[in-house]
Length: 355
Image 1 (cartoon, one colour):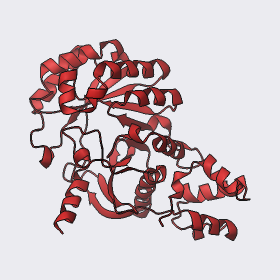
Image 2: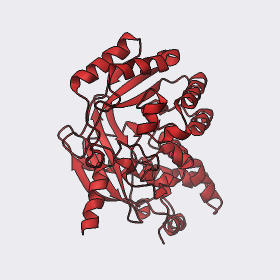
Image 3: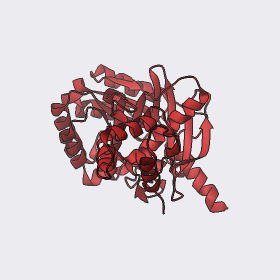
C-alpha cells in the first residue's frame, strides 16, 4: 500500500500529528527543518531526530512519491519535468527562468474536466485530484534539481496553472499554499505566488474569503458569452456576468492586482472587435488589473486553432492600451521543447498506448 507524502502536512498538522503520538512540538520543528531547509530525501538522514520518531514517520509517510520520468531542457533555461506518481499516472511541472528569479508551474490534477477546446491539458478527462503533498513535492523535486546543479539557486516564484483546475481541488490547493509560504520552510512570499482559475465562481468567493494574499489570475480568453462558451464549456454554467461579479467581490476584499489571461487564437478571438469588447467588459475595474496576452502553442489534436499573426497581436495590444487597459504580451518559454501545458504528457501517453 502506498504511503502518503509527508509534504502533504502543514506545519500545524505535522505538529498535531506528532503530539498525538507522544512527541513534541520541538520534534516537529526538527522534522520540518530537515524536510524544507536541509531537504533530505530519507527519514534516516534526520540525524538529530530520535529513532522512535523516525520509525513512526517511516511507517506512515513517504518523502518521495514522484519519480522523474522525462526531463526536457530548453535553450532558454526552461526545464519541463514529466513525473510519474505512485499509481502510475503522469503529471507535468515546468521551471522557467526570468530576470526576477526562478518560477515553477505546478499541476493540481491528473487530467482536467474543464474541457477548454484549445488546451492540451484537457485532452484526457480528470482521473483524480493530486494530494497537497504531491503538489508540494513538485516544488521540492525542482529544488533538488537546482541543488544538484550546485549554483545556489532557489525557487522564488510559483504559478499554479499546470494541468488541472486548481479551484476544482480547492482544499488540497489551499494546504499546498500554506506549506510553501511557511516562513520556517520554503518561505515563498505570497506576492510571488499566482493561482489561476478558469472561473469557478463559487470558489472565487470562497478563495477571496480565505484572505490568503497570493495573486489571482483568470483564464478569460473571450470577451462575450457566445465566443467564450464556444471555446470554454465552463461558461455555460458560469457565464461572464457571474464571473465578473465574483471578480469585483475579490477586488473589493483584496488589495491585490488581478491578472486576466487571454490566449490569442488566429481568426477566433484576436480581432480588433474582440479587443474593444474586452476593454468595455473590464472598464469598471481596469485600474485594478492587467491583461496578459498569451501567444498560442498549437496542439496537434486541436488543429482548428492556430497562433495569431504578429500584426493581429500588436493591433489587439494597441487597442487595449488606447482604451486604458494595462496589458502585456507574455514572454514565451521553452519554445524548442513541448511548450504547451499538457503536451509532453499527452505525447508520452500516446507512446505508451502504442507499446
